[in-house]
Image 1 (cartoon, rainbow, N blue to C red):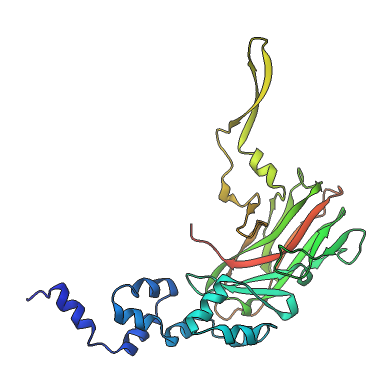
Image 2: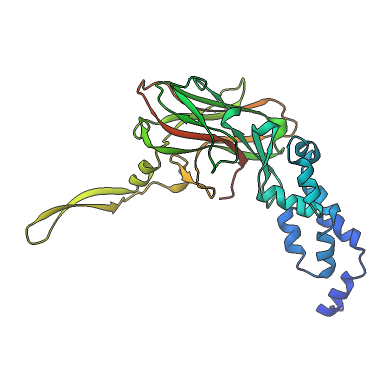
Length: 304
């Protein structure tokens, strides 16, 4: 059996119609299509086609974009379907009158949503003594909610599962940051959970104080140093430091906010019930405050 040279293999690709290559690429994913575009100029041209990126965009992308006040500007500035896809990946689109944002996960095209603080159910949220609504230049939304002081902390968010990408494992996060006057949450955990409305939801404890998570990685011991035997407190790495990925403590995001994992949810094909996410501290009875809530984000679970 004759073995073709690399030159002959390259030439054999040229006999395939570009439309045929584009059709094959459309059955891959955005990340793989971009990798395959480096094979040869024919693959590159096929990968750039609107046919391929129309398949990578959500089926209801036109309906989603129409819910934004910036829909006309977005569509007019997109030079191609690939350009539109990348714009939706790089900058969240504000929809539903500023109550939600949507973006796409770049490697897969899966939908990512954030529910704004105004789209959440916050107990006592309309009572100025307990909560205050402010504008924040670092937020994608027009308003954020600042916790002044409550003894009953309860925040819930809901989204219909039909809005999410099917056959996808999602993780939900509370997006927030502390003020300088944070109190009552440095030692008291909050209960969080994610589940379908009407179904049993497993709850777990997390901490909203990021400094507590940092301190957990060290044992503080006293050491006698110097000629006069002075005492100095030294932070030594713990023998079993807290793992960064255990989800019990907040992590800093690229946009400067903090996030804490609330739980996971697998969105099955055809699921049409409401998904509910909750954050609450109602058992301790202690007063707490000094928290700014931007919203709750739901995005595909990151690969580990």
